Image 1 (cartoon, helix red, strand yellow):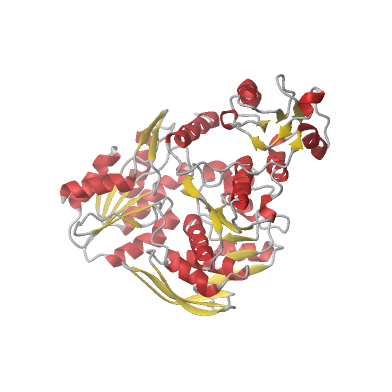
Image 2 (tube, rainbow, N blue to C red):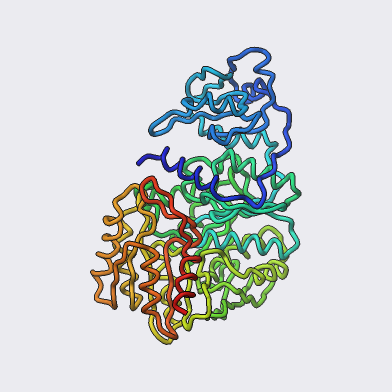
Amino acid sequence: MNRDFWLAVDFWLAASVPMTRPPAAPAALGRTVCDVAAHLGLAATGTTGELARSVTGVSDDSRTVTAGDLYVALPGEREHGLTFEAEAAARGAVAVLSDRPATALPCLVVSDPRRHVGPLAAWIHDHPSARLDVYGVTGTNGKTSATYLVDAGLSGAGVRNAMITGIAIRSPAGSWPAQRTTPEAAVLQRLLAGFRDEGALAAAMEVSSHAVSQRRVDGIRFRVVAFTNLGRDHLDYHRTMEEYYAAKAALFTPERAGAAVVNVDDPYGRRLCASTDLPVWTHSTRDPTADVFADGIACDAEGTRFTVHTPSGRLPVSLALLGPHQVANALTALTSLVLAGVDLRGAVHGMEQLARVPGRLERVDVGQPFLALVDYMHNSAGQRSLLPFLRSLTTGRLLVVLGATGDRDPGKRFRLGATAAELADVVVVTDESPRSEPADRVREAVAAGARSVRGGELVVEPDRRRALEQAAARARPGDVLVVAGRGADGHQVYGEQVRPFDDREQLAQVLDRRR
């Protein structure tokens, strides 16, 4: 299965989930096709009338083109974007940017069109990140939680703000579901321009390694970029840990950002501190010489508490979020905000009001006599961070439901199963989203890892709903049950079939029936 198919899946998912409000169209600057050509140093083909048309936006997907857009036709694995030029024209595109000539619209030809999308969209929308304090968060684990915490801290300090995560996008006027961790470059610039036009002064956003490698964040000027940690993930795309690290590190340059925040409890973080040319603020739960330091850490089923020490003062912090990993995420957020001059007390107050991060150790409670949670935990580093904590919450046993996603790094599947079996009493292996791979192959790789450890009970159940039922049937008073790997994801993908399935809703139904 190729990339074009998954783009179609993403589009279907986006169309199937209603927005609470559609993104507002940013104000146009009156750029023309001729102006765009001059900006790129190119000669455009077309009539005088065509070259005088106003360009009000950029789109690299013919299905989402709106009137006035410059359509960016990119080369694909199976088909070239120019295949869909007629559709883009019918939807109102006024010109094409591509690596080869178009036939139906005025065309700007460049050797690498993807390289131009972000900067060009930023220019067309009058450089929205110049009017916003944009806080970027990258790393393997913790990006979503840290971004939610930055958002909450800004709100608590009275800053009108917006947020972009892999779960949701929120502007001052409303919110809607996200379809990927970091949107494409043209979408990002449109979002930031909309935030600006709605009166936002800041925006918190997740930045994936894919987004950096694929130039989605080109054209954005970050006030602060923050690094959480690095562990094995996405090696289906980056191939090696060194390439994965390089993709993350490429965000930390003076051309992209004003300052860096780095977790120096992580070895890759310490390496990044030594290599970046940005001014760096560090944070730690181990090294009191870091710029921001946390001690007095206490974590239980009620939340997470610690004392934060910053250049702006010292304060106790009491989060509703569960798990010791949330201390590091909160430090990422607090360090970013304090560095940028945001009031510490207000930021802490805002973070303390954050009741949950969807799909991140999110409780599912229908009155059952044990703790049930859903979490995005999808790599062995996340398991080693969270499962010992969950063990500390139980007077009985720890039960884990997990699987692995198809068309993703196959090398981590065995480790997922082995780590779960090492740290839990009952492991139920099931399907997540096999995508184009045979489901039994993905599932068996996880199960093989679990069998390699002489641990507790192992159950293999392909059907995810029945797997939840199997786990719930084994849970006793005082136990902890966690459904891992998908978090807030609302769909499973089997080949070309996309099935609605939300772990939180399904688990609640299973538990309610048993109760």
